[in-house]
Length: 173
Length: 64
Image (cartoon, rainbow over all chains, first blue to last red; front, side, top):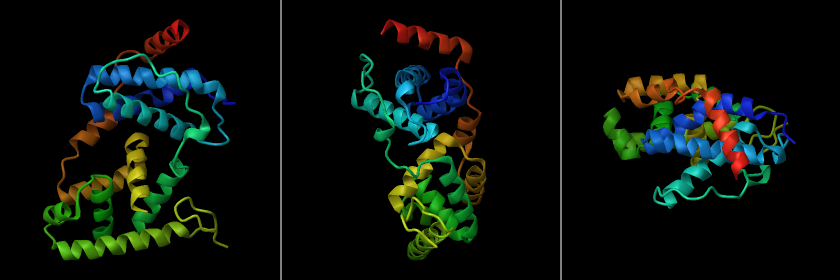
């Protein structure tokens, strides 16, 4: 059972949901409608949501992503709201939580700037290595090497800490 | 690893972690990428009055 109220959920996540959806649809009316759909689904599932099994943020994020996927699959035609509710079991990627973002930020800070930039341009901005090479005016070969080094360094950094990390799944003593 | 990074950065677009945003901004500045879409995203405000909208949603729920 969840302790979070509908009001608190709406207050905390409305802007994030709307902003994310608007970024993907570029249409204010669609974004408003879809945001409403997200919260309708969330309110309907709220009683059954188990906060001990998944974070609220990840749960809302999953509902939002599913809603967006349905929207694009339907070709933007509005239909009856899906009756399915999203339980804690439906959430993929248990590492998708606020704490992991902090871990990533800490790990990225440890990287040399040149490696960090490649990771951000590749995985946040979605650029190919060729595009990164052109943007940074560095040879493709060099970008490829730095990219590989950056991934290896991140893997190592995220494995340390004396706890199970969601990334590597290894338990460190 | 790569897929997880993509998902995490996608999640970052939603959560807007401040420390990560700072690193992203620094990268964009160095790479001279326009950050306008992201800055707009961070300052985007809810359409209409949230307290009014939540009442509308609750009404819709009752009707279903």
